[in-house]
Amino acid sequence: CETAYQKFLRQHYDNPKSNVGRNYCNAMMQRRELTKPTCKDVNSFIHEKKQDILDVCTDKGGKAYKDGLRVSLKPFSVTTCKHKGGSTRPPCEYKENKSERYIVIRCNNRNEPVHFDESI
Ligand code: U5P
Figure 1: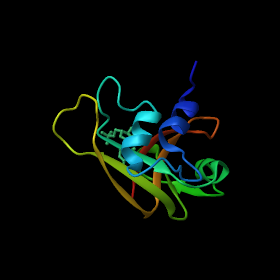
Figure 2: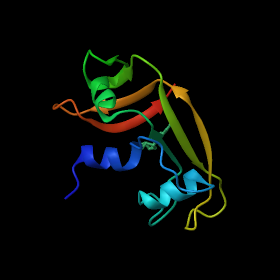
Figure 3: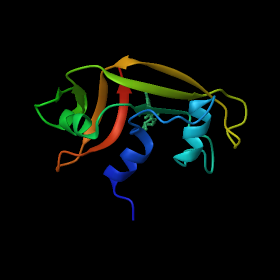
């Protein structure tokens, strides 16, 4: 079954950014199974190398932030998808916001990311 790290990758890792047609978020949220049984409200996809994301869990690429979270030392390319409102049942309609932001994540004791908190 899916580990917490695998789930993080499914939900938040997309590098290079997938070519999925005209609405990236609508396609990706469905493809990554984030629209069942209801539309996930907010979800971010990171367009950087897997190793660079892993490095945020160590001194190489990240540092301690509040509440045991870690923040990246450099800005990452991130697309955040936000549900447009209306029905929370599929089909889900999202708007996208792509920019360079510091990511805030939680890591497990094997220095793998297991939670995306926010980007700042
Ligand atoms: N989330 C993102 N990006 C954001 C904020 C939240 O992907 O910028 C996702 C995370 O997967 C988080 C979930 O676990 O939304 C719930 O966020 P929250 O309601 O705890 O803020």
